[in-house]
Length: 68
Image (cartoon, rainbow, N blue to C red; front, side, top):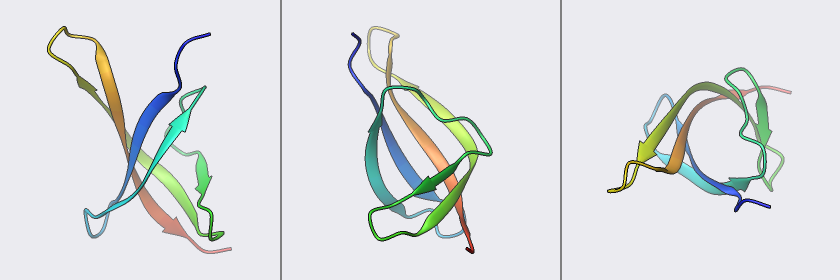
């Protein structure tokens, strides 16, 4: 089984890194993430970052807060 995908979750408004997470299946734009405190975030953009070999190293998920 492949290694989980490393993702940095970044707030769209403040451009602040909120948390790091690892996924077996990469979430899509429009999906909702819930952090350990119960805060909800909708993914608005997904970017991939390559390492020196040209392989995907990690992803950045840009999110906005969602009210319950």
